[in-house]
Image (cartoon, rainbow, N blue to C red; front, side, top):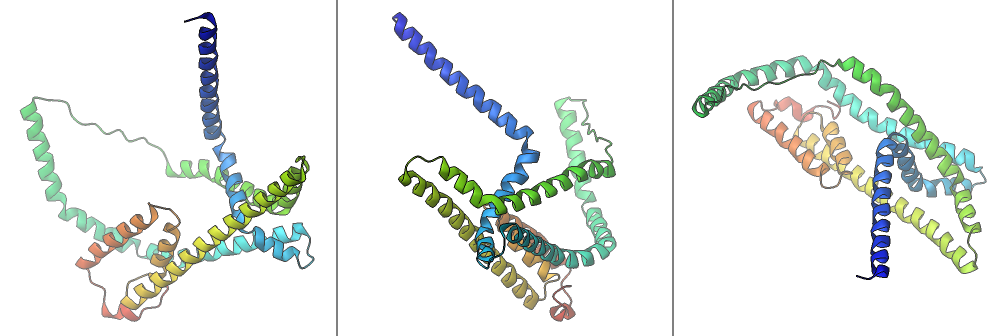
Length: 282
């Protein structure tokens, strides 16, 4: 190997090392700053979704800051409506927690014999293997109220940061596009950048709105079918199906697992015939 080849090899190794260290630094920065960056990027995605709506409001002669504020308020109304849909049936479930807990205790009592048999089998295996070590489970004494008190300020700060980022992005996204266009040298490049911004906003908005419409229709159909079948709390199950369907590959199997677990529970306690005509909020 000549001296020039060795210097070339060292240069390539140095470039790879710099790229590797830069990747590590980027991952560490994203991990540390995720509390701040996650709500900002989520606000940008949601802002792209509601961008065409803000444009239609501005076409009526309304200033951009008012249209952005109206869009954020509309988003909060939709979130409040979805939360209300969850809260109403969940409140009924919370009232039934004592009975559910007593039923769970009775189910655990039925499994006590099986657990005792498994414990005896474990002791026999230990005696055969000659192991005197015992299994220890350490439970940290952490108060739930302390965890909530520690997490609540961070969560509220993320919500405020998300709403503020969403508002400023919707209000200034055209200015951001015009600023990026001013750095383009040729008219062809300026037209390409303008088309890129418009295509990204329109396609992201169309995609997210289409998914939302499909999931809303799914939630409605699931609620309707379960209501006609007499399943308790059909609205809650429908909303769960619609929300979990946003999570690709994980949400639908999770909902099926919940529904199958509920079905197994109901096989031991069939629904009364009077539930068939119960209100949809029940």
